[in-house]
Image 1: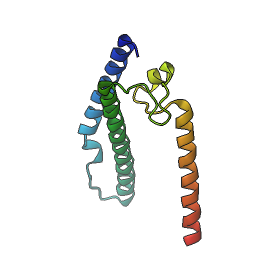
Image 2: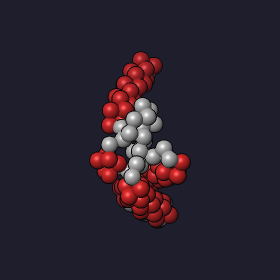
Image 3: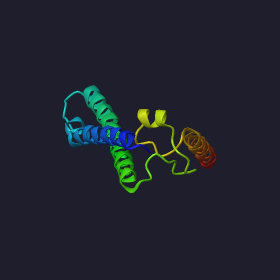
Image 4: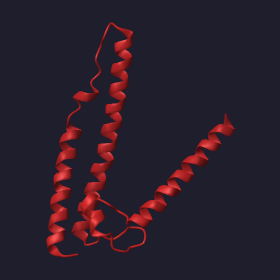
Length: 127
């Protein structure tokens, strides 16, 4: 991969890492608030749960960004972790932390969907 592209991707990854770090430091969104109204308590609990899910998503993404930065350091950045083929530059521009090429990502998502469907079926049978 060209040095110019590597620097561009590293800058994008570092920017995203900083953005995520700031987001993860702000825990005010998940503070427990009290209210005398039962309806308000339920709404605040639902909002808190959504914010917890957002923090979880940001935490996962921060790990992916850090892994991409590590791949930049060890020289494996830009290659699919599954098929080892180069990831297209257009994909890396949109998702600089991408671990897989589009084809492998689609296969992984399809496998995950099939696993989820199997799990749902198992849960229905067990119930």
